[in-house]
Image 1 (cartoon, rainbow, N blue to C red):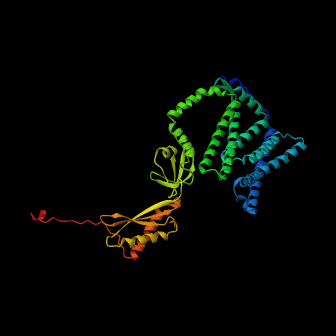
Image 2 (cartoon, helix red, strand yellow):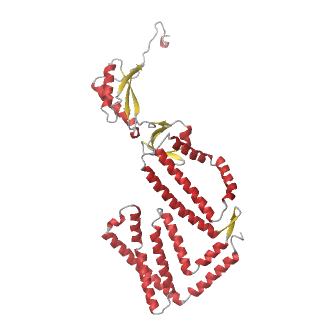
Image 3 (spheres, rainbow, N blue to C red):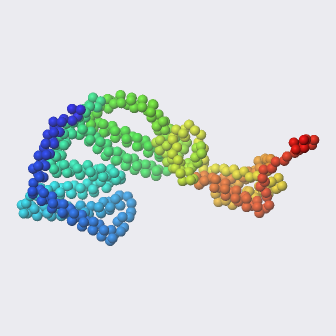
Length: 435
């Protein structure tokens, strides 16, 4: 702990800060400049807000659009108040210099506002609002410390505090630099991986599974490279991490075995091409089409609009019905029972005619109707039809066909019987009431 934080050095920095504050802040000239700067900020901010409203009233389409262009327009709109502040304080600074007046606080305000404007312009490039604001806060704090003359002292302090990892001494400054480097490489690497995935999606020679597999491999390689570069930048000997990697292996074997199983199962599914995005699958009670393959799970969108996340391991170990594995053509069976008094040939013809009139039923193979058996209460028929878009639903097709069959049976007097039972009483038996 003593090596990580040198309290004598820290105390010296605190004393230096207190001394600077007493000399540069607690005096009449600085207080007067502070009041002027505060008044200029209030005035410029009010003018900036009025200007923003006038711009939006004159060009309401500024808030429309999407992507980088929209973020740039909104960023420029939000920068109107600080730009006014920058101009007013700069004008005041010029007057103070011309009159040979004290102007240290004006210089500080001018530098901080200029740095803020530049940082805001740069931070709009971040897709995430959180990371954009974090970058702006860190960069502006560094600019403020540099203007006040404290940045070098803080850098020296961070460089003096160190800790040991794997036999290598790492300073706090080098650790923070590694974090910044890792963040920048991660953002750039993920952007590159997404761009490559977009290009892969345009290659018609690759199957959907191959596109997803190459995209995942690209992301994994990028992450591994980022970690290696970041660790190497702080001087960590990668061979010293062998013990750590062994501990990670033990953790995977016990606590993370399900996660590891899902990750490995995901690669197996991609390589054997058993399922792919767009396939219509049935897993247990879940029926829908696959929208995406992730590292840990598969997303299945059901006909109810629900998105079910199924772990990859379940698709490996359990039975999966893939309605569109090699062909999207699917045969549906619609069982119907008719009365023994009806003519089964007429009923079969009516059922086939009902199927022919449905827009989702294929003309080839053509619909057929079969007599499946003689049941206890009905003659059992079965209509068999083919469709080629199971992702649009199966139950709705069966419902339409049953309604069409019902209408045709009603028009032609064909009865769909209720269950019937015949009761035979043997002669000579004495009923209990007759005893």
